[in-house]
Image 1 (cartoon, one colour):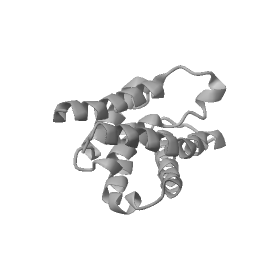
Image 2 (tube, helix red, strand yellow):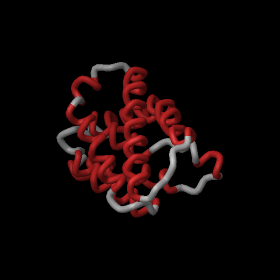
Image 3 (cartoon, helix red, strand yellow):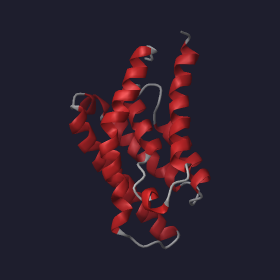
Image 4 (cartoon, helix red, strand yellow):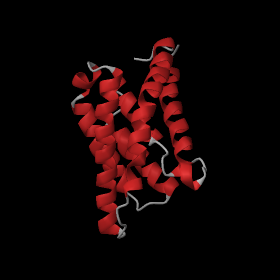
Length: 160
């Protein structure tokens, strides 16, 4: 398979994650929706840090800003910060078990949400609610399944 088709799967998975991010859901379920785009992005940074990195994170964050309707640049900045942390420690994180990775990535998701809240608080004036951190729990629970799925396709398609 050609290199461009292999990378096409990476971008296709990120596009599907973007669609899952903006998919309409009932209000009760919407509060607990995992951050699919950030989870898929973190997987590809861990798997291929030489191909997916901070630039990809910035562009995806900007697209999420446009799709969700937040202040432009807030998600782009927070995605970039989280991507930098993951990319600078990818060799360590790769050696963890999937459960340990899920726990570590839940801390990164919590950091993402708190940084996003902090920026939104100063720009727009939102107030913190405990329900704001539900995606951290659901993202932690979704990570092993997402890791297994993307790793299976990455190995099957020989994406390097």
